[in-house]
Amino acid sequence: MMQKYLLFLFALGHCFTTQSQSKIVTSGGIATGNGTVSYTVGQVSYNEYSNTSGSVSEGVQQAFEFQTLSNPELTTVNLKAVIYPNPTTDNVMLSVTDSALTNLSYLLIDVQGKVLSNGQVTIADTQIMMQDLATGMYVLKVNQNNRALKTFKIIKK
View 1 (cartoon, rainbow, N blue to C red):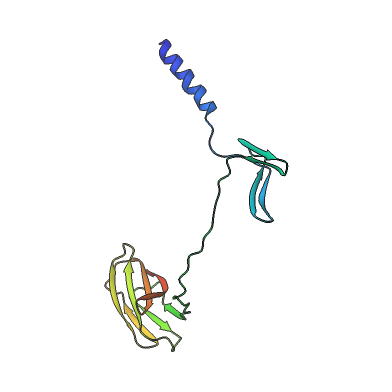
View 2 (view 1 turned 90 degrees about the vertical axis):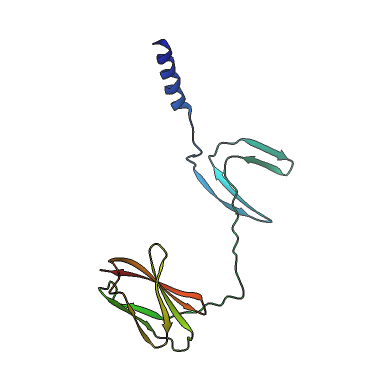
């Protein structure tokens, strides 16, 4: 019985001493000059470094870095297209208003990623048959030369 009591007290005491990696701080921001430093005021200090120029105190603030990856070969194409009616009960119309775009195709995909139908967009209004499909959500991807231009969410009632 005494062992259970001691184990209970140990567990209870441990609950009160456990800390997570969060802190309520008063302020923070980013300072720039010859470099960039992010700071937080009111944070617990763990290490301090100083010399005649100044001092730096390290805490638990995590470093971050943003990088933008791009491919200069990809150009932006603005596809002007609409799907109607949405939600639908049987078929939808894909209406492309930009006649300058050529070699367009579509993929009708279910929520599991399975391609249900595909075809070429050869005229301004292309009918996409959905009457045999179950009620649910579907994705319609419009491609040009196998590169996705626009994606639509279609609800089938």
